Length: 295
Ligand code: FPP
Ligand code: MG
Image 1 (spheres, helix red, strand yellow):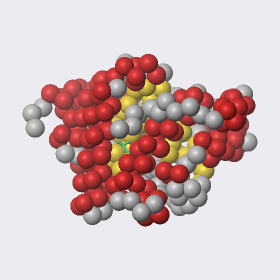
Image 2 (cartoon, rainbow, N blue to C red; image 1 turned 90 degrees about the vertical axis):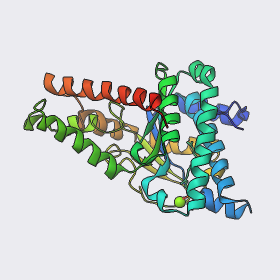
Image 3 (cartoon, rainbow, N blue to C red; image 1 turned 90 degrees about the horizontal axis):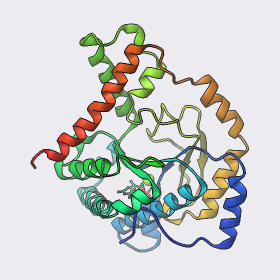
Image 4 (cartoon, rainbow, N blue to C red; image 1 turned 120 degrees about the horizontal axis):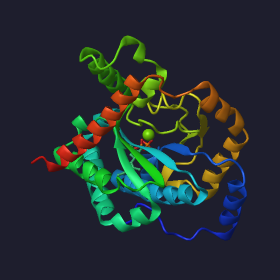
């Protein structure tokens, strides 16, 4: 069963390309829409779920590439709220695959620590089964102190749901008097999202030829460079990945200006800061409660 971070040896020409690109600007945060697993399965004459499993193997390679080139944060769209509408067989299969992978993650504590990789599950966890929510909480708590890089697994996620959830957090603050109307501004709302304090992704990569965002990081992706490639996710190569970085580097300066100067995310009032600190603390307490709860 494959590890979360691949240890495969890259061919010398990929290492060379990687080193050359490393001299240019490296994005802090890359997001992936991992699309095309079922088409890959059909093409390869394997079961759909096998296609998703190959998709996970690709994720572990992609993580290795990202860590090697120095990307600090990766967000992957693993399961959208819309995906619950797929056949029961496929949804159950994906949930079982995810259980298996999170159990594997729990066995990889030392490896995750060695790479300093923290895992965060972002999405509407109330839609998950108790055991899966617990596994996700355990993985998040286990990797909590790893602070070199961050993997966000968007699971039971849509951007609209995330924004609605952020609004609910803010409304609660208004109702109980911890916030005032003026506190609800764009930097504040950014910090109420599941991605909290994360930098916005400089690049969003979608595989399989679809040129849509499918309700993924709509807020955070407001200035991202969008890279669409026709290859199916399980077939993505290190060259495809490096090509996306190369294309980004040609517009990196503009993206940087947009993200840093135009989209300031600094909070302006101590009241906002205190509130956001509480949201963060509450998030960890919820994870601890989820882990401690009976089934
Ligand atoms: C989209 O391809 C892919 C998914 C809905 C699932 C992605 C999940 C993985 C790669 C496994 C990751 C698991 C963990 C635990 C992180 P598709 O099914 O839409 O394929 P199609 O576009 O060819 O129909
Ligand atoms: Mg698809």
